Image 1 (cartoon, one colour):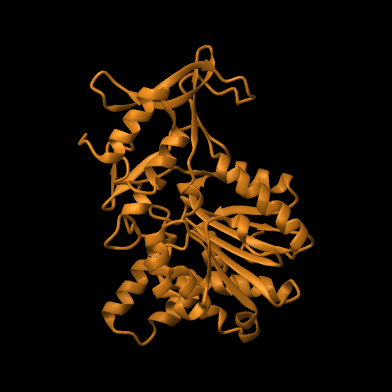
Image 2 (tube, helix red, strand yellow; image 1 turned 180 degrees about the vertical axis):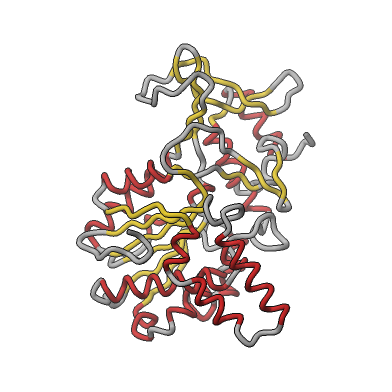
Length: 355
């Protein structure tokens, strides 16, 4: 493990105060203002560390744009309406979404675009990509203006830091990040038992909680119940709840050790959709799903759109369209692991794509 400024910073924190929670380790590794991953990397895209669905196919964003337009029309067509994206990446999803929204002119005119993005480097990319949309940026969803809201978050929840707990013979203990005899980062277990009510899972089980996701779900649930609207979350995760260590690191499109190069790799963990939906429901929203990404996109007409997009194109373009279409839907790629959950407020109509 090569010594980097962030690694030395983490070692100093551990020596001074003891092992860090996994939550705090992730937060520092991703968001340290000088050495964190998002301060030093442009992660999304073929030249970054990972590729998201909007970069795979323009159809993904277009269908979400039409999903929003449909919900807006059936909800009374409020004007204006806040359109917010959490973690917009390179701005590709919002670009495709707005192009589809323009097919419903009244909807496009009603939209006021807001982006929640904490990374200065990604804001610079979004400024170029979305110049014509005249977006307003926010560090947190808490500062979004009031009023009817349409919110989209693709691969946002998975990057929110998690806590991890390990079941031992005497009960649950929290996992932490400490130092081994060689002064390298390693996982350790807090000797103190956890007294909160956790599931009665077998010894050796690992349980994950995501406090920031619960807070977001609770805040959105309250807002949607009072001010109307919908929120759409697409991410990889599981439903129903299940034990497992899902913390992972990705650099240059390859998996790596989450503790090996803090600040040089993206850190994520699978989303517990049941926990997220329950927090939003308890706050007053209605949760729909989750359903698989494949099921959701098929319900919105991805097969028809792909055929129309490929019609008349050169053979190479047709192959690219088909490859992207297959990657979004195939159960061995993104179709099943990725899931979609919607939140609505008040007496909103059932959103498209959910039973």
